[in-house]
Length: 600
Image (tube, rainbow, N blue to C red; front, top):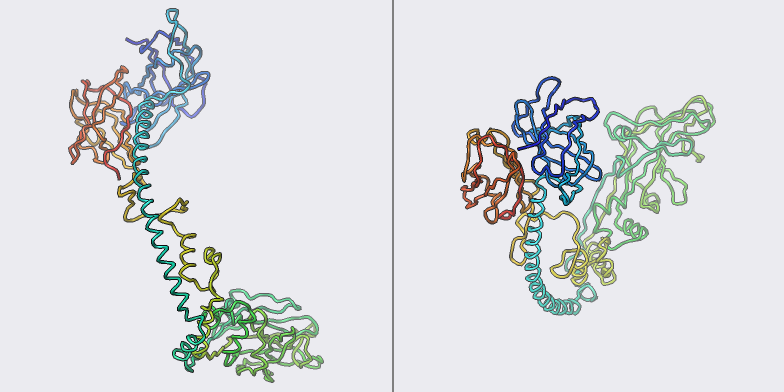
């Protein structure tokens, strides 16, 4: 028997004033205070699809309760709730709102709002304590959660005790290993070939000999091994990507010009030869750290330098008497001056190739940063050389194509071996700080320094450490010989409903989820036939099996409990059974959770 009030809720986009139902429930209406709603879209009843959930939120002064409405008539959209005893302790106005959760994950707020009142029955002196927040099914989940946490704590303590025993054994093994490392270090120090002059000499003579090797490298103007810029009244303007493409093309060129009276047109090219050679042939500069040392080594192994290019230029003569064609290459001196690379100059209007090995006075003009800086000009500004300039009306111009620098090195075997030995000399051994930092690429690591770096950088088999970043253990993890509890990156999921088993279900669904070692069940369904101590879901997945047969209750429409059991022998024989007698077309709602039997 219920005290019932029925209201029509229209689903619409416009906000409306709450429906004043005029309903008054009393604190003595335990299990009999029922609200019935018919959901409509306009004037048409809103049909509720299988698996639809209708949450109803009741808000009062100081809190709110959330109900999952029982679907009385899915075709005509009729749903109901029976007030729980825990809200009857409240006295005053209650505001309600209705929502719809559709099976395809969509949801909507019906915009239906209503109010009713709760008053104290004269017969009641003591009423249930009002809870600020209530969610049907939540208490059962929390009880399972606390039970699971207690179980995990016991298992963790057992694992920790076992791990402590293993750590003690490992410490003893490490102590024995340290003694052996000390013995090896002493033998290495006693037999260090790199600190004994006679041993070093034998190594050089037997391996190095007098055999030499020649290396020839071409440095093109590509923006990396060779960079370029146009002169604009003394300010270099860097080449664009298109310029770099053109100067290396077989049929294109780059051009620079000026209209400034008295100035010639210039292009500047820089080749960081030592930097590029060190990257390609690091053994040549092994053990050297300063730019001065590297420059000395470069000049020791340098055999020749040649620059090849095609150029032409023009303007007016420096006395402005007539027009002239003129193009000539220069190199930057060490005192910020410049020298002509040779007496060659192109005085024709055609592209002419310039090529020739530099003399010793030019090859030594390596700048402090390890670069050669060369110019191709119509007239070198600041020089007294003849050439082509602008008179303020006629521009001076220069055009260049296919420019490259060619370096030839000659390195003998003795030089290579001496460099390697110098790099491994005791003066070049890494300190403990350098080994632990791990940023110096010029120092040699001894076994001791290697062990110290491993202690600093690597994950140790003993001691406490914090390890950052994601580590993907493809073959598994063992703790004291046991597999820990793991969590999959995705959630396991299964569902059964009238689509899967129409003979069993008249509507709604049962869903299973698993995250880690916890399995969750949510249900809202009615049976198509009467069931008593019979299965309702045959062969649910093995990953959902509980540690022991799981027992849980679902709520009938009359708010009574119906007992269900997850019977889990495994091997595909799992069954969810309704232990109580359940009439056909009786809706059941609720949720449950349990600990999975088998870990991932």
